[in-house]
Amino acid sequence: MRKTENSGNQKRAFIVIAFTFLLTQLGWAAVPKIHAKGTVFGKLVDTVVDSEIAKYYIEEYLQGARTNALADQKIDGLYANQNGAIPTRDELSIISREFSVDFASLFLTDLLLSEKKNKELNQVFENYLGREAVFEPNVLNSYLILYVPGWNYVKNGRLTGADFAQPRKLASNIGFENYLVPLVSAGSVEENAKVLQATVHKHAQSGKKILIAGASSAGPVIHLALGEMMSDVELKPIKAWLNLGGILQGSPLLDFLQEGPRRAFFELVVWAEGWRKEAIFSMNTNQSRRRFERLKKNPGILVVNYMGVPLSGQLSKYSKDKYPLLKTIGPNDGLTLLTDIIAPNSMTIVSLGNDHFIAEDPQINKKTVALMELIIHALGESASVRQEASIQ
Image (cartoon, rainbow, N blue to C red; front, top):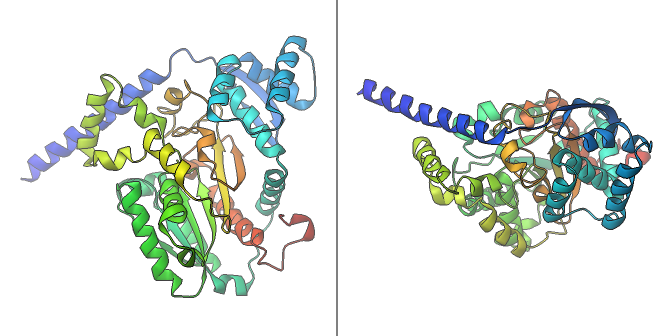
């Protein structure tokens, strides 16, 4: 019996590995690798990029230099046409084709950080990264944190960080009461939104203010629960939502895997992993974008997005097989398009050089603590916040 079970596990593992290899081969086709180095948006970029114009943008244009009249004219025209507005996914797709994907990622970053609210938020975040966190005792006693885990967190969470084990440990060490929301590990957006709703109801009895943090596939779960399923009374204790790379409008990767002969191979992987197709497809772009459009905006809840923005030379081991496939339609973090991460009525922290899999960031522990402090201070709770660090 055990021999048969081991044989089945080996077959499943082989299918998954073969599928990952196939994705890698499909994605990396003749991608230019041009070295670029420069400090942009306060960060040193020293990597390879996908085009000469992305290199010029980093090394010259964003430094205030104008040494290529033709390139300057094109880039100036792009800024004039955009007129400060955050580009849509369709606009970024066009920019990616006319310039390059790395250029479009940097252009989006520049416009996001040019918005006053985002500029101030990112500056405060950097300040918190550079000093020891300070939490007032009354704050620790009045808040609890609900961590909403990512896809398949029971099986793979310790590898990908989807189980929030390390953030929960850090929060506990600081003194925050916190809980992991017991989602169905490979469940649909709709069924897990019900789990979150029930969990919030349970912990609302404590009388504490609730902070919700969720990553990746938890994003649409949280958005659905807050934006449609919960009444104003149920929402009242929820003060903030930290959206860590949430795939709010789905992952085009799921659409790609449903095309042509890839579909049969993908269905083999679904079988090997023991997943339900309806649960997976609740996160495709078709269903996700329809759901996103109908949800309420939750103006009474502070929403902060944390967006990894990788260039093509800055991918983690979990993104290398996925980013190139999505690159054909625009800037992405290795699982979803960048603009599809942004929640309505929100502010955005931009993490240039990191991708969707934020647990791979060497600074993730420091950033986790800084994000907790940032959320609390953004809510105006801590007396230790300096005047110049306040967020309007």
